[in-house]
Each structure stands twice: as structure tokens, then as C-alpha cells.
Length: 374
Image 1: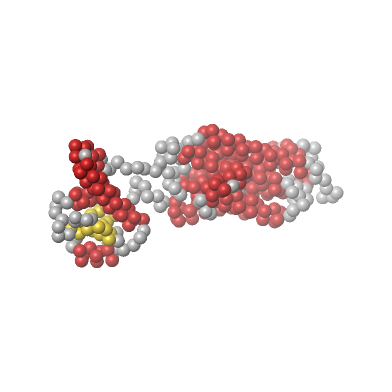
Image 2: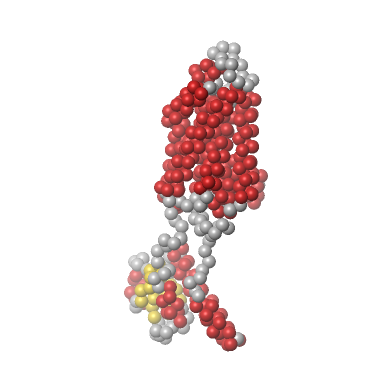
């Protein structure tokens, strides 16, 4: 049996096309994701936005709006005081993102409608709302004016998007979680290949195994554990590549990542063994079905469209419960974002039961196989 396991290992790692789909292709997808949006998080590394400030005739050095912009200068924006003509020219040449007019009624002029301009508009709206509030307090509750000014003085205290566990996460992380889930299911390629190698009508190895007295369940499990070990290494290589080469934060729970990767590798290989156990289909047809078995669940888990999993959760949650890619993606979220141990354990139990069921059905199918001649 040990000899067969060693032979199975050598045969699998030498199959370049199979290892490509199980390891190399997910890495290539990860690179594409990173180039597209993996480093687009507007986080701590956000650059200051250059803006022009034009002082109108009725503005003075103690204008509250100028003081407000002065506090923001060097933090969120980079202020350049200019004459109006120079400011307009700088805006047209994309040297500044917008023009603030400081006067009795502050104004903002922009030439585009993108996220940078939205930030500038938000800054102006914040000032106007606070100024209106101060005027209201001064008019109706002058005794609380100093208290209100002290509260506004702490303007640097802002909200931050964090997970329930207190970690800041890139919103695009959903694509990378779905990518790892897809890579886990790509173990089906290994499972199909390994199962076909064990079938007497498809390979010489299978013909030799067919005449041995070894129980078929033992042979099936030996194939499963060899492929499971190979694919687990593949998934850990992919995870390390995403975390340390691409620099994508997958959460601060390496033990949880390893555990989810372990179950993900198991579900992928077991699904492939189940598909490969259908002896009436040729190897090429089985591989075609395997492509569908990996891509379709990946799509529903958000691999191509990030909100797909949420849409299904609202309208057809049963699909997410039965889709192993969605269960895997949700497990990564529970580990890295939600910090929900109970939900994660439920997902891992679901994956284990699915894997055990796939292997059991594959055994029931293969145990009845008989060959008139080989």
C-alpha cells in the first residue's frame, strides 16, 4: 500500500497540466486581482489631495474656514493659496483636485466627479454643518457655546471601518477569500486524475490495483490522503503568496487560516474523487465537468462578482449553505473579519460532512465495478 501511495504521489506531481490548474492558475488569478484592485484601499497610505484656496475680497486671515483648512493642511489636503486665475489654470491642468473659495459663504469648484472630489465636498459639507450648528447654539443656548466649541475642536477624531474584531480590512478582501476558496475546489482536478489512475480501464496502475486483494476502501483512502496532502501544500503556497508577496492582509489568525485551508483542500479533493469514480465517462469529459464544478461555485461565492454571495444570502440563502466555495469564503470571513467562532465551527463541520459524504459515495460506486477483460 505504501508503494502505491509513493507511486501515486510521483504520478500526480509530474502531471504538469493538473498541477497548473491546482496551483499555478490560482496564483495567476491572484496577481490579476492585485493589479486590478488589490492595493486600492484608501487607508493609511492615502496621499494628501492638492487643493487651491482663493481668498475672496471679504475674507480675512481670521476667517474660520481658512483656519479649518489650515488644520487639514498636511493631513488630508495640501493647501496652495493662489489667485483665482492661477487656481483655475491649475485645476484645468490637474495640478489641484479642486478650488476652495474662502469668504462669507465658502464654495468648492471641481473639474471632475471622482472619489477625490467627493472627499473635498465632504470636507466642505462638514464645515458648513458645524458652522450652522455653532450659530444655532449661539442663538438659542449661548451658555453652552464654549462646550460646543470644545467638542468641535476635537475634529481629528473620525470613524474608521473595522471588523467586529477590531481589525481594519480592505473591502476588496472578499475577492481574495473567494480566490482561495476556488483554489481549494481546484483540488478536484487532482481527485479526478488520481481516481482515474486507479481505474483498470483507464490506466495500467488501475489494472494492477484491480487484481490485488486490498480492500477498495483502503485503496480509495490511500489515494485521497496522498492527493489531500499535495493539495494542502498547494493552498498553503497560494496563501503565503497572497499574504507575503502581494501583501494582502488575510487577518491575524494564522491557525484559523491553516484549519480552513485544511478543510478546503479536503472538500476539493473529495469532490474530484467522487467525479472521477464515474467510470462510464472518459477522462476528458470528467475534466470538463471539473472545470464547471470549480468555476460555477466560485462565481456564486463572489469570485467574479463580489456581491453575488450577498445577493444569494438575501434571496436564496440555501445556495450559500450548499455551495462549498461559499462555505469556505464565509469561514475565512468568520476567522478574519467577524471573529465568530461558532459560525466558523459550523462551516468547518459542514465541509467535513460534505467531504466524508463524497468519499463514501465514491466508494459505493467503485466497489461495484467489474471488468470482463483488461
